[in-house]
Image (cartoon, rainbow, N blue to C red; front, top):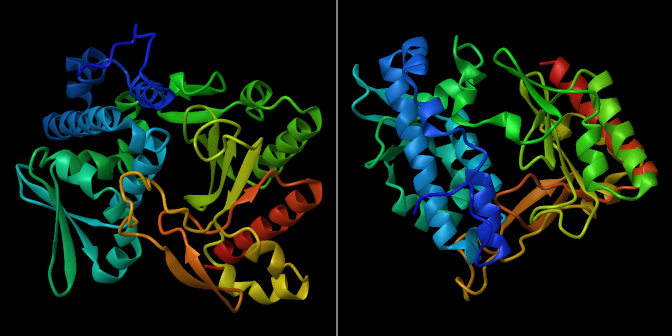
Length: 350
């Protein structure tokens, strides 16, 4: 199928959700123009071309299976780039074939995510081969795509995230503007917050939290259909905020997911403040997704067991960061800000 920008009728809202994601990408004549080819070189251009073909192949498959993938596109893309970020690329000189190499340790942490998309990976050419020491990921349909994916997230690359023509971030939200090769969120993304949240008290709370992140040197970027934002610190995600809308925030005004990567280094401070229950009570547990397709449970069910602040937490979702705060009030937001400051201190000490 071809995604038509003039399409107005959809079988279901889930189909519309996937169509909307496809509409974020710039037209092919712009993304794959001769001007772009001349600016980035033939090898990277060919890899970008295959990366685009892979993404649209995946989107078509999702559209055809919208009852499963509607509302899950962003999660899928996030998981793909998490795999890319944690891997090393193997390539021969002319990029005819390249592979990603993951250590067995990293693969074991991502295995649940990979299994949850097994049918989609198979349909789009992804192959996963394990040996005693590592895991190789390749694509038999789009063998050159990994080069562009690695360049897209490579902060030392002279191209890096300037490969924004692959996805038109200008369409994500009125708050996003392209400035050279960088994406900048104006002010507090107040346009998006005003559009998504009606309650004035909640709106102020969200705006204040965005102010806190920006004043504390967390770089904000759009991370979805204009309703999600990712904050980076020291080059890595430190917080993810979803506003009302999308499958993860349909019934709520907003949700905060702090990425407390180094929580073990300040767990004593958390316990001294008596905030362990605050964290334990907001763990994202396995929801046994898609029971209609997996009546006996997906391969990742029933989730994983983790140790958090000295307590074993069972059946935690495999594919998400484990701590989610839905509709936090002012007191809870203050606690989350304190946790983020502790995480910043821990990262500064590295």
